[in-house]
Length: 135
Figure 1 (tube, rainbow, N blue to C red):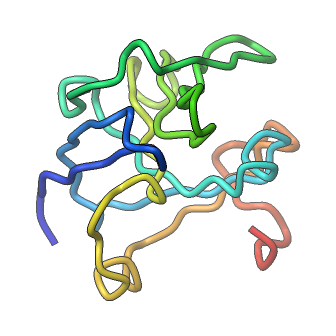
Figure 2: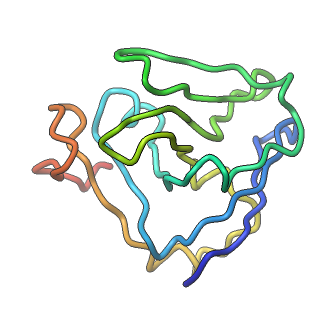
Figure 3: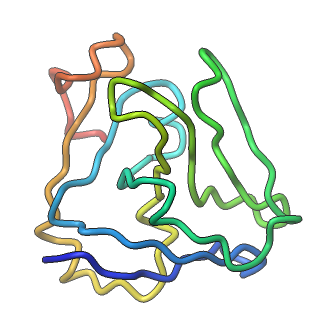
């Protein structure tokens, strides 16, 4: 794969965005309390690769723990689209795009996408958890 522009949205269509992602560079899943609850599968990009097209007024956010993440979701339909924040260990400012919020992606395009598993539950972010089948 290579860098590709994807359109994305929440379920009701109030929030629309586009992102530039090279999915072959990898995606992530985590076992922390938040990621487990939302069944997170995401791709991390630089903020310059994300463009909100509409729906800023429909976005709400959730922060917890260290408050280094702002999880954005549509306050109309509740669908989580992106998270953003600043974490030095991953290169500073970032946007984490929920793969499930990308529109028109064929399953065949996602089948071979590399997935990295993080043990966030134990703050062991650079290593996968012992069990990943449920993630």
